[in-house]
Structures are given as C-alpha cells and as structure tokens.
Length: 164
Image 1 (spheres, rainbow, N blue to C red):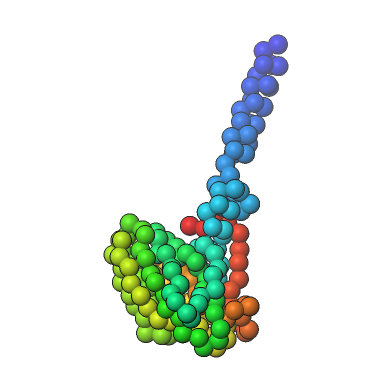
Image 2: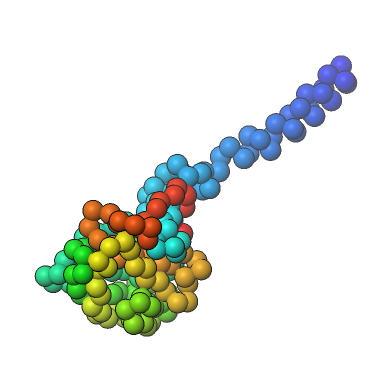
C-alpha cells in the first residue's frame, strides 16, 4: 500500500508542473491577449517594430500618429509614391519619445502629452522606416510605404507574438 501511495505521489508531482504551465497564454502567438493588443511584430525596412496596425495617410488634411510607450499607432502609413503627407504626432505615453526618419532629416522630440506636426514623404517604392531614438531596440518603430504593398526588398513582413 505504501508503495502505491508513493508512486501516485511521485507521478502527481511530475504532472503538476506540466498542468501549471498550461494556463499561461501570454507567450502564445495565438492568444487573445496578443490579438487584442495590436498583433505581433513587423520588420519594416530592416527594423523590427511592435505592430499596431496600418493606415492610409491622406495628403488632404492630417493623419494622426500616436506615440505610446514602445509603439507607434498606426505602425505603417501607406500612401501614393512620392506623396507628401502631414502627420499629427501625439505622445500619449509616460516617457519622452521621438519620431525620427534619418533619410528625410526628421527628428521630432515629444515629451509626454506633447503634440507636434511633421511633413513626410512616402517613398517612390519599398518602405522607409521611422523610429523612436530612445526605444528603437524595444520595437518602437514603424514605416512609410507605397499603398498596396512594396516592390523590392525593403518592404514589410509580419510575425506573430506579443506586440510589445
């Protein structure tokens, strides 16, 4: 009898960590938490970004871009090749952020709660990345691309996972 109890106890302890591990969905690419938080990650013009959607930027009027802690929303802005668009930047995070596009000479600093406007140019083909110079390594990046996707190697690719 003692041997039977010991075997059941040992088997029970061996299964317990497996059962406990099943309840964690935060690292699962298909979890509800990941989907509701904006999706996984994207690689835009060679830079890894936390994905918070795509939006078509309009040349008539302003397109709002939210800077939050470790992401831009939307993450990808699409427009016509060579088109200039005005972006209304809003830092809704708790940290200082920047909107930086090296190839266009843009480096706008925003303190928490600040707003600013910048004019950007949609590339003639492919994608151009923008990022926060303080949080780029945390995935705070995005991109400008030609509507309908990109042609060539500088486009956008998506992977699952937690968006931040």
